[in-house]
Length: 303
Length: 293
Image 1 (tube, rainbow over the protein chains, first blue to last red):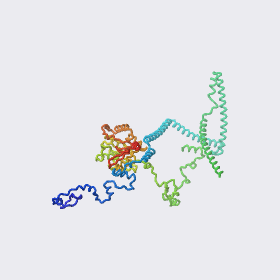
Image 2: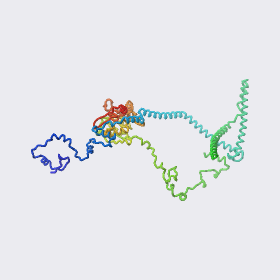
Image 3: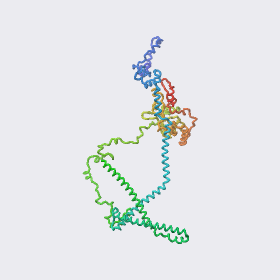
Image 4: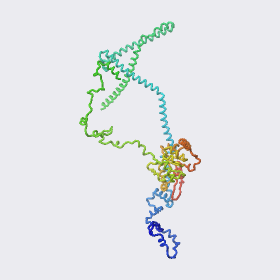
């Protein structure tokens, strides 16, 4: 008997008696007509409060999507009034002028945009400038590299030469020192330290001997020049005699230097170069030390 | 050279014997220092302190002044690879596969231009402008599956494949920049209109983004349209497809937005009311010039 039916009266599914029983129950036995609605009910219908939810008024209005009747004082800010206008529209008697910024605010906004936001054209310009600056730097470096690459073979050769010269200078230094040590040993009969006074004494003697030799060489060179000038004058006067006389004389110069000595000179020159370089450094170091000492003395004097 | 050194010794020394030759390689007993044993170390070294406990501070710090802990500056590690993270823009990824899926499931209408608000209305992407998220980016996945012509507008594209996949089917792609205020208006348009604010004017992109949005290769909205046409043909040649005729495209595919415009069909400065179904426009000259500049 009990079946689950959708009752036309109620909304819920409930266990009702079967439909046939219900229908019987609905039908009325009397012959009276159903009551008709009267004309007065139109006004009453409007005034009937159809709110049976037992909710408070403002909640019911919010539930139905109607604007609130009274706007509280807290809600009289512009943002909240805008929101009410946006949600409920014209029914709220809010002026839509509130939604836009005022004239003063607009002036401020325009000023802010002008100051803080750059225009598109300016931004594009800045981007271009940065790109061009980068390119420029890269191009400069490239040009430098290409320029230097052209000089590369020359630089490589120079480097080779410099290394060879350095090695030669080192070897020359060793050679010269060994030679001097040997000379001192021969001179004195026993091995001598290079720092010793005896070495310096011997070096002085050698220098004096070299100076005397240089003087002789200079005198001989002067003689040679005079001899050659004379020969020229002689030659100018008579050409035939020159061929027979000049041919024999200048082939062998007795005052010319031996080629072996050239190596020694070059070795000595290289050694002298090294010594001068080192002495330059030593001089600079000594100068700095003197300046520091002077500063210290001044400080002590002030105290 | 050891040979030369040997000859030198022969020259200089009076007598050459094994004992005379200075051979520093062979250490004599004088020079030999015994490696300290464990016992000697234990006796000499202290048993306490950072050295014994293998807890010395890093090189350059005085262990006595450190007082057993690192100086304050060294307590926080250095992570230089995170340098520009606070300023970087984030774009949420969206693949071609999801797009195709949305179109197939009829959540998105391909006959109308597809935009940020259209994609956000599907509620699949939650973009937060507070977290420096500036929109959506298009990714490669699903490039061979994609097969509908659409008019798409995205904020970032990083791969040529995605652009080629869209253009092969006859679609159109543009990349557009929106600033955070416009993004908050675009994500939830209904909420924005219920706030009652006039439609904002979109700012120009920042300086580090202008190079991207003026590039025709990325189909930027500020780029020259002639260059974009060249790039379309270049891509077609590169990936080996034929560009469909542009005259056959419907008019909707040619719709583009003004650089200051956010919504299709709505201009900045207008007030929209969804309840009344009305649009209010400002008439003051100042307002008009500002919003339309």
